[in-house]
View 1 (cartoon, rainbow, N blue to C red):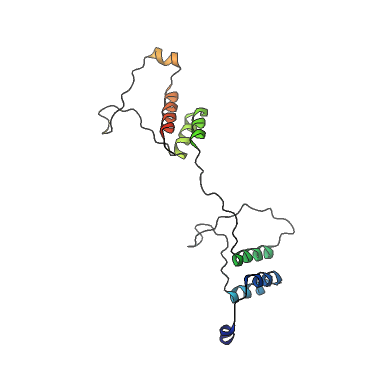
View 2 (spheres, helix red, strand yellow):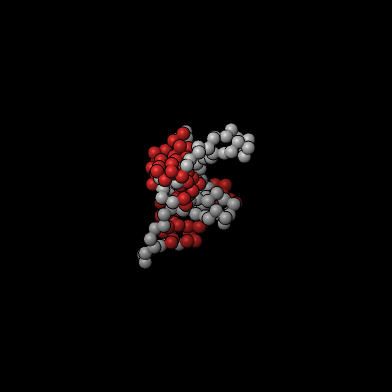
Length: 173
């Protein structure tokens, strides 16, 4: 565009831009329109690929024989002009509610399941301690005999589950 053209040029309305984008037949016409109208298009990016904040990738659409990359790019440019965004994709791990956590603790059948739950849900457990082991106020250990353990089916795993259950039930949400 010449310097004289840029002074007299008036930006088109969004409806006119969308119509002009839809009418483009080639990639070079579309790029010229993007440059002339100063349209900012941010394509999807992986987090390490650039210094721009990445856009979350939408769920993949199946590619068919009739899939047209040019048409997809035109749709992206139209979204940039109109300001439309794709629905927000939830990020990261979604923490469970208190009741779901209590049910999950009850359903754990192995140490690895219980530890994974503790790790993913950021559950803090204060374990029993000997009085000289740390500066934290000690919780006294209960003396159990072998007969108590066998009769109550009290195993270290069940005691740990009980501590996790207690920690979750006392937790504020």
